[in-house]
Image (tube, rainbow, N blue to C red; front, side):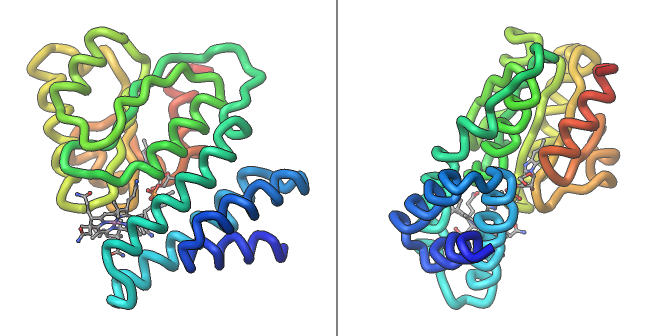
Length: 211
Ligand code: B12
């Protein structure tokens, strides 16, 4: 679809206003928010990542692309969060300590909200103590940890270890995700599971909760 390609191109060019205008236009044309997200915006960010890797763009451009993505997400949010199912469970989510990537985590949060979860989002660069406090106070069914910057992966292990120390580990299911994560890593650090994207995450968690 032509408009999806235009959104992708606008994101790669980091034209904030254009990304926003075209995203709204696509929604007005009744294109599904999932298609806008996966076939335009995430594709554009992938290209940005490759341009950064090949040193054709640098951190300021990464930041602008991240900002454009966030603008578009504010328009998609009400659509992704719209839920017609009864509440199914509670989730606490955050990006782990040292990592400031939160676009993926925000999408996971929206999709779980749209699937009937009551989501408490702790934000980004979240210290292990804050995750543990939230598990203690909110008593969620699921804790979701996100990370994108490979060196911060080990912060996920810290959260799980601290939960064990506080005797809280068996009170909550833990799902982890983000580009440098896989099932092997989940097994290694003692998480309950990994999912590559929000829909498969929802499916896995629903299974855990017997829904
Ligand atoms: C935008 C961006 C930034 C922005 C982030 C803005 C923001 N608010 O998030 C800024 C400018 C801040 C940034 C900074 C940096 N970045 Co950066 N960034 C990116 C970029 C281009 C896009 C990330 C993104 O949003 N992707 C789109 C989202 C939707 O995808 P996602 O996060 O993977 O999430 C999806 C899945 O993984 C999954 N998921 C994610 N979390 C979870 C959790 C659960 C529970 C589940 C089930 C699923 C799930 O679902 C999501 C939706 O489908 C990527 C390249 C790329 N293609 O990813 C580089 C990239 C991640 N960055 C990179 C780097 C190196 C950096 C910096 C170190 C640069 C620097 N020199 O300062 C810093 C690190 C700062 C830090 N300490 O965290 C590298 C990381 C390399 C590595 N392997 O570690 C990448 C891969 C670029 C590259 N190719 O080199 N970055």
